[in-house]
Image (cartoon, rainbow, N blue to C red):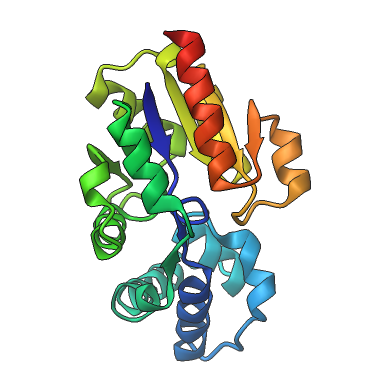
Length: 219
């Protein structure tokens, strides 16, 4: 089975570092910080979309400036305030040991995504990390899923996407892939229910059990 994992909110609890880095960026631009809980719904969006909303700006130069401030803030400081969700390394080791192929698919820029995966010592579990290039403002997560399928030479019926937001499920459906939503991430219960995933995993143990059952059914 080919398993595609979202990063932020699925493998890593990066919200503390993301929210702090967003607010430090706003402060450097002379704007007021935003209460952290109001930022939770932004996790999983492209940085350009986040700052376009927060700055209320149609000014692409200002948005690009914000993105340029944010990226080193997170990679150098915010990442240190992040953590892997409990049980994730053990789950990845178990899935990998069972013969499944694993890849990361995220809208975090590719350099930052690889840095986060390495920082948490998760890179031995994954065959590849897929994310947009920093200058790519229009990347759709479905395009990244396609890249993962192509790299692995995987069929849709032998692939599952695991993520915490509706966009993860939408990206999977664009290619006829089954999708699992995790209950410990940043997507609300209403958002996840509306996206209609094949399964909602309430715990990491639940996730691994469902993936094993799905693999057994397909074998």
